[in-house]
Length: 337
Image (tube, rainbow, N blue to C red; front, side, top):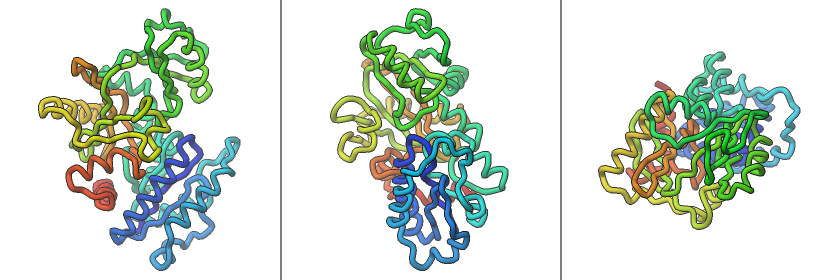
């Protein structure tokens, strides 16, 4: 198939998206697909790229070109889509969405592709928008009885004092529309709270103040409504922040997680319910904390999980004998349906 792998964009997760996209593009080409890598924000001059890419196409070179463009991202530019992006995507059988963060993961890009009749991987506009907004996700979880941590939703300018919002230290302050642990601050002392709020409000107009769940952290991919093996995330230092998430060797992924069968099935069910609650298809990933009493709390759902070499869904797939290229190929086939 002719496949566009969309990456890049103008979010704080641009570089992670480029890593995801280049890995996916290599994998799909190894499976015989005519896959090309395009930065959604800058696009391409060559509208006939599919006709040439089956000959000599070097994904690593394309990745380097896109990375070089990162310094030219202009926050004031009104247009999101780069040159010829829609035209080239229209020529593809499907678009593999390797975008992360604002504009690419929040449903806007998905809605645009829908209006042009272009097929793509991952969830549609509504599920993407819900999953991107941590506060809205919380409301859906509560209405669907998905276990989640107590939280307060604050808009910029509203009262934010801990007593007023009914929260107690320790808390985690989160920018509602961030991803990859960008704009997430753990607050263990009340003196740190105002600084955490400012950091998150600098990124978004709404923040979530959530109870800090002390315990073990897990992630579960859900593909075609069925949970993959559970992976436990164990940072070697600190917590699972942006650095520990993407720096090779900074975090251990234990998959399958060291849980008994009963807890494993219970956690997989929470993940399936969480993804179903916001309407994810055909794949997503749920992040879950478990405290010392084995109580589980779903923190959020990622509708376009990372596909880098340190990402979680590839680890989980390998645990059941699915290698990375096959995983990418399977996601394309499911999305084509």
